[in-house]
Length: 432
Image (cartoon, rainbow, N blue to C red; front, top):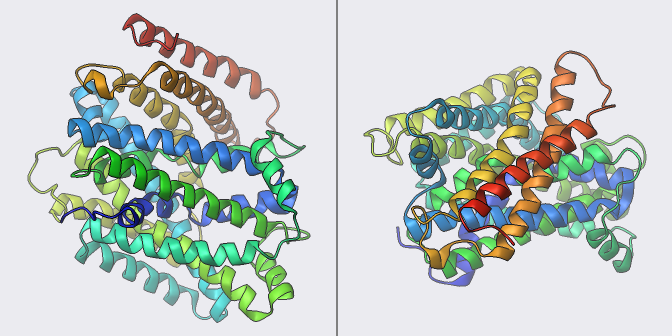
């Protein structure tokens, strides 16, 4: 299929990334952040949005310039060792773990609109609709459909956010001035972690084939910026909630201001967030395994048996837990722990590849400023990821305290970043 030539078409195509990171988890985290702290944590979304653009552009640049997806590059770099298998299956595990939440989130949105009516039928219906789109749709066509759903979702959440009483000055200050109020650290980790997602890097890189560098950069930046604005709108909508956070509490707050259609706005927006993520998570798992482990192997083409078996397995895993009405908490905790390490490692690999002649021609490699920016973001993602990893490991053994996690995470993140900077310096691509 030929790439859409217009700028609007480019943004629409790359909205698959926004569709992937704006799921029920983002809705929950952003709305809870708004309900607890007002617009003070908007800056975390600003950082996460521009960080997402940076890493997604780098992953897509490998595909557009060198014809290598991130999975292919990882497979070539790691050879036949365990590293590529570990990364690939960690990504698939994360996709499967969150799939039940995606389906249940979509159903929660429908229930806000339709009322609680046989939730297991709604779960099955959402799962079957997502399965049908993936079975009969080409990835590029699915991406365009997701772009339309993201646009509709953005409109709904923007209308909801417009009802908040916060002045523009307070919102702008919150968006650019970093501050972490008491109890806000975990929300900052959540806002960054739900926006810069490891499997999205494999997803975006795998979909970037056949596009020009200019088209890719414009479409990707535009789509992710729109996604960041939607997340900000969700956070502002959450500021209307007083008391404990829940989807019903947000809907009731909007109902009080706008009448019944205000609650419907939030319900349909939540449904769109869950449904789009219920499509992109299995798709990302299939693309990751295809590009990492199944390169040039029969059965891994877009509709091949291995490709379909991968995304179908993720879908069935989510459906099984969704129909049971529970989320696979132990698997989610394991996925959180894996992703806590995976993101800074994948980002480090991307930064390394962006400075090597065998991966990118010199004209398309990172410059010094881009390397400084990348190293800074590796440090931040490593700090947040290691802290999240520590929390997940403690939670898995029933320990709720977080005391003592910051210093080890800080030291490890600094060591990882310093080691990467030294390697870049040795190859005469250091940011300094």
